[in-house]
Length: 110
Length: 419
Image 1 (cartoon, each protein chain N blue to C red):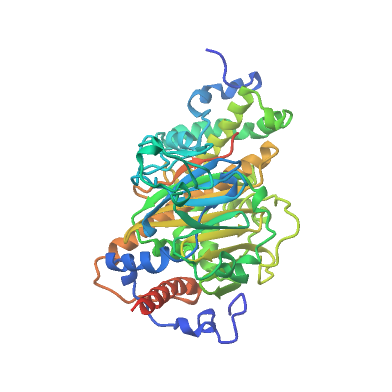
Image 2 (cartoon, chains in turn brown, cyan; image 1 turned 120 degrees about the vertical axis):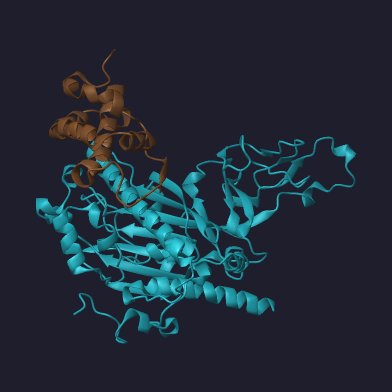
């Protein structure tokens, strides 16, 4: 299978198939379907690489990112999703919210 | 000692004596009959925001909007002259819903040259005029100019599209908004096109959810588990005080002071906030928007947090000091349900660092809103038991008091006039 991410970020490739998701509903859905432990592993792998990722992406034209760079950016959006359970709640969903949902129907691209 | 001075009367609430300071009832939020009265007195008479002009980028752009509280379903479009117009979404021939895709119960949007009824093919120009009748010769003395789409009063202010369902609105949109709101003119809403939109159905009366976002007294408590423990403890200890409240009927405003997260110790903020330089108050690096309109930050608070303009009946424009804004819409669907829509608007990002701080801010907004929404269902559930019907409101909850009073006043005025 060909890589989803630029070669410089081969270490993050194991997370790419699950977390390189273009839309918020997909990322949020994946978060709810994951355990905090799974997200902790992803978080621990990507956060030390954040500055490298940003430095890499900043060298490219923001309005014309190649596919592998767009995937990398989506991986950062997923990192943000995963940070909430990992850093504070130790559960995928914000506490005390029962069956309540709040569906994202439009978001900026990329 | 209050952190911010209160009006000379001693409190914000007493500054508006018609509001009183006594306990209140929420019978207005649990009664199906009261909701029917609100429909007639408010939702069929007030100016209602249905969107922004950016949703209609070119000639022929349109979107539909069902407004159950006004028992209406409309189509809003940009005509050939570039004007934004609204019509009842109904063919004049046999009353079929004119614009819909797949399921007539769902909203629809797109671009078209004209509207064509799916039933018998009657066609309407973007300005609503009837342009084509299939087998016109079969009809009797039809003057097509008399059978255009039924128009809905539609006016635009600062790019916000408003409609009004009364036969003749008693005020123009501008008069209805009044100076407190129109003093926002000049804010660059039109440049802030990077939009995150969210929607949900909430099992609570629309006013109760407006109340939730009309006070920040709840914030340190309800949202305590959104922050590191040290920050949450400090926030509860400090409590919440707003530097400024303002009521210019029928609308209301609360302004808050700001927090400089970027100056805080690491154990007061979440690591991801520091990594992305974003969070609840928005991007840490303020977007440069130029000179701000005179209506913003009325208390001249420094640091300033946000201004929440609560437009009667069901629309909020909330402007953050960090150069972004939110809108809230509360669309009632029954006495104990409504559709809540939240939109987050930023300047379009031009680099990845700005983009991820926007992402962090939008995701944080959603997490807070989820807690607010679920709490409201818990409130509605208990109010409907009706065992208790008197409740206290503090001075930081003055705007909750005002919304319910304003609703009551509109109903009394309307029903008084029609008696």
